[in-house]
Image (cartoon, rainbow, N blue to C red; front, side):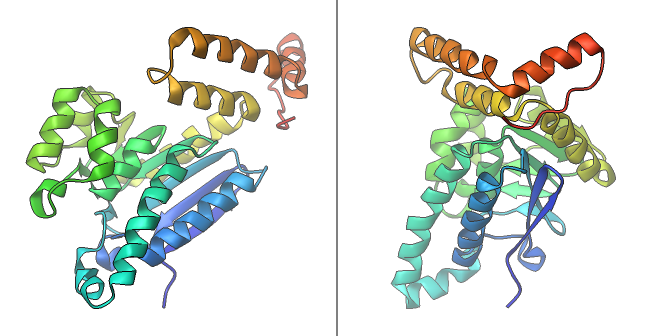
Length: 259
């Protein structure tokens, strides 16, 4: 059986490609298990500074593989594994310590939409379609119902959650959900270029910034501000901080090592 994802690294950039194109990259238990392993590998690899998630074929991801529901009926244990693994995967993606870029190459619905919700940056092909879609067939998505209103204006999130409609990247760009809309042929080039710019910065500082940004609005601003200054003090003590100062003084590009 072919692997449900591909994991590749190019220098400081790791790429996870959902690779079930004939099934529009629908999520199965095996895919979640593979995604968990890939996220762990990318998190532990000090050489990796940025993660890109994309899909193969004409879809980014259409969510859970509804076609496997008959297997769930025959094997309740499979259904239980899915409902145990899926929340853990999304929590792991939310807490992933390094920047995550979703390169949306086609339809991103249900679980695919939720991956976009947790990504730090979304770059989408012009012809992509993005939406929650759970309402169309399976009621509602527990993850998107909780997360979508935190990354979109509440009324836009409500429209997506209640109607199941899909939106264009251009529409979602207006609401800040999509960072860049590009021709499909330029999608990965754009994502890799963005990842490269981020990877060139101080990795420890970027991770600290991500951690603080994720907590903004969820923690008392005074407490978070104090934590931000403590994090900044820790960054000031790193070798990378000194390298940044030297590079500025010497009018050259810095060479950050993550130390």
